[in-house]
Image (cartoon, rainbow, N blue to C red; front, side):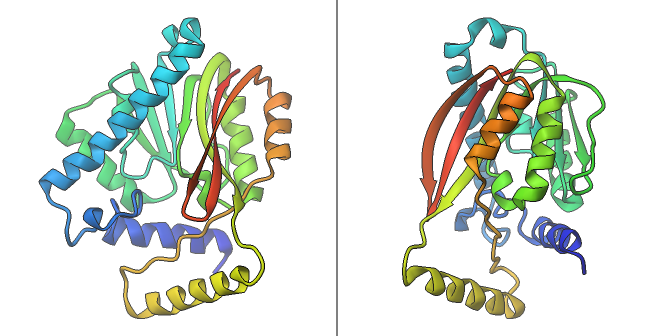
Length: 246
């Protein structure tokens, strides 16, 4: 099986059996445990995230924020952020590789009775946008995409972001594995993989680091004029939050 097919199969499996945990890896969002209150909490976390992000963008670029009408949520999964974006934008398009995750997102869209969100399945790093849009959002997505593919996707997304548009991106750039910890980490990942063969609900999520020099070079090449950064860590992975104005 090709690497891309393995990647898709992995996310289809999660989408079918543990879609909410596949987005937020907390036990309370496991399919075996989540209830109506847990589901409401899951989607409310998306509302809070989008509200914080747009508030920060508005603080720095108030005139640009006022012109935002159309949004793209790349790696939308179960629609946690797409449906939250629908509160602020006239139209939202959510894109994801997993049909099973998208089915969950669409069911939730119908339950919320939102008519300004459309979900689309994407095929690897193939072009999928035909027109420009005002705002790009992608959180906790590129960390699961091999950089060779991820850079092509990022180029495609930013090429179609209109001049004056804004974006939020979360990109991992460093994994804390020094000295003897590195082989131990590999062993842990191997054991998790072997365990997963016997127990479906144990997943080994692939994580990738990106070259920040390449990221900034791409920004400059594609006309991103202003960049704000914020730094964070999740487990042993360091990431950058990029707030952009093209």
